[in-house]
Amino acid sequence: MIIKPKGCHDIYGIEGKKWQYVNKVIDSLMEKYNYEFIRTPIFESSEVFHRGMGNTTDVVTKETYDFTDRGDRKMTLRPEGTAGIVRSYIENKMYGNMPNPVKLYYNGTMYRYERPQSGRDRELTQFGIELLGSDDPYSDSEVISVAVNLYKMLGLREIKVKINSLGDNESRNNYREALKDYFRPYLSELCPDCKERFEKNPLRILDCKVDKDNEILKNAPITLDYLNEESKERFDKVREYLEALEVDYEIDPKLVRGLDYYNHTVFEIEAHVEGFGSNNVLGAGGRYNGLVELLGGPSTPGVGFACGIGRLIMALDLENIKLPIKEDIEVFVMYVSDTEKNYAATLVQSLRMSGFRVETEYTGRSLKAQFKQADRLGAKYLIILNDEDLRRNELKIKNNKTKEEVTIGLDYLLYYLDEVLLEDEIEYKEEEYMERCTCGDECNCTEEKHCGCMGEHNCNCGEHCECTHEDNCGCLDGCDCDDDCCCGHNEHECHCGEDCKCHHEGE
RNA sequence: GCGAAUAUGGUGAAGUGGUUAACACGCCAGAUUGUGGCUCUGGUAUGCGUGGGUUCGAUCCCCACUAUUCGCCCCA
Image (cartoon, rainbow, N blue to C red):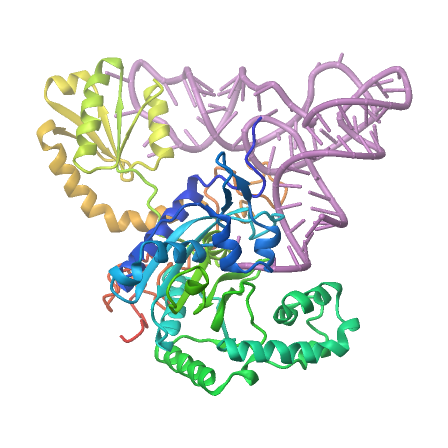
């Protein structure tokens, strides 16, 4: 059997639907913030990343997929999004022919040759934004708030925003030297990795996991003490705007980030849900004022953020957030015998073209089996065709929930469906989450004689699993509302059935 | 790059050094004379990761490999 490459995943089924939903939320959020979609190549000249991200960073030195193409060009599968975007910004002269600042977002796969583990794959999908051409501290704060708002819109609650400032080049260099001076006498007491970092990238000693409880690290100088006046003021401004945007954050003086191109503001957003492994950073970013110039463009400030979609969905799962995913089909067209099949084909097509979500029978099953299939697919209405009805220009349509069956004229069908589907819409939305267990958790099914399970496993028992995750509605913070949210925020569809008590920002 | 655990049908999994490897789910069919979901009955499954070794005999014991999962490093 041929299997997928290590560290890659096939996303399909309910998982695929979650991805689609998350992407939809991203697109709608980006529309509101007026970020434009950009798609750049999945591979670039190796130089883009080697120069852009820094030759000493681990990502570049040992984690890229490098290859030589048939024309002997050195290529690299992109390990992150920013460098490619900046290359495109320069190549397409966006600094000249687009409104400044240029605000771009991307959403695509990245590749890093690493040992896979929980929350870390070789092929990962990142959504990210880049705001190029503004050095205003407000842009830093807004970028952070975009990230936070995305997580909130999806219903995540347990997140933590950490920020820090590396300062401008002068501050950063002063700090780097101060740090080296500080660590030099203690070198022998640090872990082997840290000794190497001392030479290559001393800042990274600070977030060493091995030495994290070491007094030497705890007493190390922090970046904020080495910021020059200008950088310090700038950082204060960023914090001021964050407060205006109502972003809860904490300052982590040891946050330095791995990529060389960062200066001034850096930030990370962590998930704090039980069950997350050590890879709990959902998204991160910062300012990179030197990068455009480094890659050969005009000196241009920039700030950005990237978010791993896989980890995001993992966090949603761990917080047991139910996404409003539409799974059920509206109409299932079945036929009693082959003689009605032609008409079934015509009818299915015409219903689909009229905008209904329609399924039919493909494998020649018995009528009984067609009913089962319709149930499996969660069909709301069943159309049962038989010759006798058709001769009278009629058909039978059955509400699959109430089991009421009526015979109606063919001409009346579209009108009838419009009517009943509209009526049922709200009611069905409440139902659809109860019917299928997608929790991936332990099976709480008590009927051991039917279920062969012995303990923990992904629920596959086919019974209606009693999962306990009916609470989270997937909407913005603190909202307990029904579909019609009083505040007018329409980004979400919630299904909790409670009265609206929402606390949206500014409402 | 380093470390640990795991590998049984479409799925979740029992189990044994020796004829036809449980059970449950799923799927298909019948009871139901052209209307299912419950129930009952029957049927279905290229199944012990790959390659060696020990043994009269290995899915089970040993070794290697591969893959998966988790952790370290690093990162989203």
